[in-house]
Image 1 (cartoon, rainbow, N blue to C red):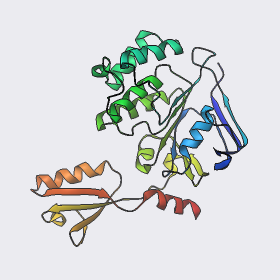
Image 2: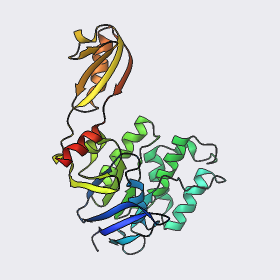
Image 3: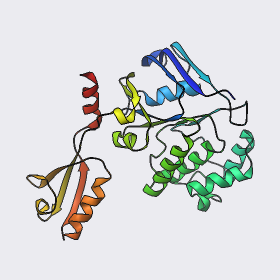
Image 4: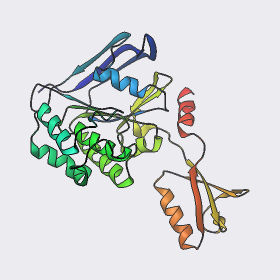
Length: 285
């Protein structure tokens, strides 16, 4: 069986003759989870569309190597921003329709439906579903056949926390036997689940390296609460705000829990600063 690979050679790609991606070159051959990281508008979706064959290069080339794990046939799976499900179909009919096209059986439909947790949607029409529900159905469609290369464009967007956690777990498992490209603008999500990171800024790749080598720095948090936060956690007060740092987003629930247990009512918690911008500047040094 041919091992999967993705090869870009001085690639320019974009829309109506105007390049969004500029002089992109890389070779991806090692199986694993590659987090394509960048701010909105950096070129992540354009890169995915070009790899998937939706867009043709304006210059240079993109090449895909590999076979389906069953040999031959379709070896690349692409979850795009658009859900790709006809509005006038019921969820069950739509998934069965795509399973037939892909050569997947009913067991595959059952597997993805149970994993993503959309049993309660199967007899509903697709059109009136909420944005989050539509995303779950689109995820199920994209996972109906196991592929050697999987392209997932912000797969956890609009998902509830439990569904997002399940999706990250599934993707991590998938990456053990395939190349998975997973776009995100969340630096800490990349650090949490990725093996490699492809960092894009203004349509250019500024880093392609192991996630473990990234200097993600500290997460800066702004907190508003009724009570003296400084008596419970290490922080700095700025008017009505309390400013503190954390190593990762996983520390935030513990901080809030400590405050609540101390009788302090937390009214607002949000991230301050721009971790990606800090990382870009670090790369430019």
